[in-house]
Amino acid sequence: MDRVNGAAAVAATPGASPDGEAHITIRGLSKRFQGAVIYDNFDFDIPRGRFLSIFGPNGCGKSTLINIVAGLIPADSGTILFGGKTLQETKIGYVFQNGALFDSMDVFENVRLGIVDESKFKDLEYAKARVAECIRLVNLQPEVIRKFPSELSGGMKKRVGIARAIAGNPKYLLYDEPTSGLDPVNADVIDALVQRLDEEIGVTSVMVTHDVRGAFRVADRLALLSEGKIVMQGTPQEFLASDHPKVKAFLERDFDNAQFAA
Figure (cartoon, rainbow, N blue to C red):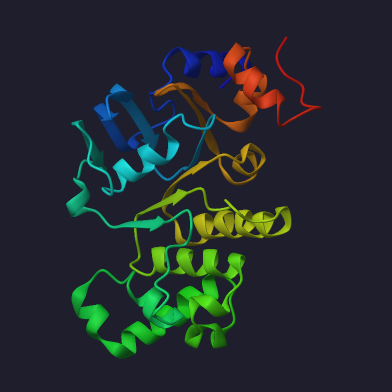
């Protein structure tokens, strides 16, 4: 696909999947909070096997969208299908913005909660092996397993949250602001981890983030969300080549030396 023409095509149909079968299909999504319209008949496709980062200005509905997709917030109307299946028929891992670890549980028990198959959850030997594997995958040492959240740094808590999200062998991995609250060094560590996990476990990943630079680092597709609508969806190269005024205005704040389309 030609970079400039491809970007224009994506911008013309911003919710469409431009490069293959959609894996997550959102149709007619509507949501209001206290009378304010967040989404109104919103359509969006997320391509199969991709890592998609959704970014946009504060208050644009990023976290609301990912929480609706995960089933944590009900939509007022609309449908969401995962490869043609409903949420209840699908394995999803969810990484909460603040980690959302249970303070009264050690790391083992927190990560074990991600094992959604009841028989495997109850099988202590399986649970021990799976938790140990997930802790290894997020680059934590084995001794962390018996620590409590109060004994962990912010970055370690984030990684434990990711370990819990992958414990159930999900087909879809959803991230809500995974680097929020971290310093730049730890944010880079989490970005690198997220990117490696996506390649290693082979899932369709969706991340909402305020960190545009991080989104460009980890994702192979991006989507700009503004006022409850997708302004553009495309590759990082297509975004940099876009002449869409909203895209240029948003990216210029984070990429001072980028070469944008004339």
